[in-house]
Length: 211
Image (cartoon, rainbow, N blue to C red):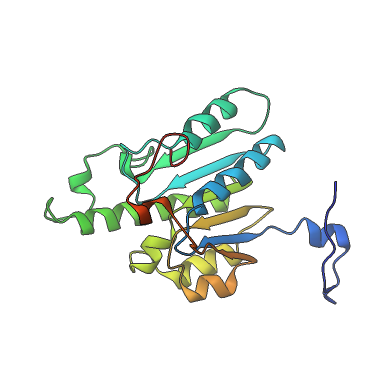
């Protein structure tokens, strides 16, 4: 299988194998369609390699059922490839057993931004624990760029944690408006631009394409 040839070979003291297997931080950003789709396609490759995969889905409502979730859950349970754990902020995260209105101490339940910001931070705290424990080989932080852009989670902290993560853990982050500090730190950044979209002609999303 073609591996591709790098245009530059850095003088970093690493062998070709060591450099090839270096864990990556990847960012899919921009206004175009396909950011999450590309990340989930990467998860399929990871599953095929037998890697444990952790998906942390920020922002999306629990009512929004993406097709990739069902497919990856089935594959993860098949025993033929890697395992797949899927966590949704919209469902209050799988490790939190309490009502969403108590997410912020003393918060007004009507203050959805405060509650959602707290949920996003709780998700990030779990990701930090998993990184420290080397729970997964691939982390898909779907729409994680949004809570970073909105200031719910400190970008400098995220970069510092990712820089110091142990072992061989790959991380892919999706979402519009990825902060410049994250973009500068990441190993791979793809900006999904939009040339045309069916919504421009008034067409809504459809089965098999958007979900």
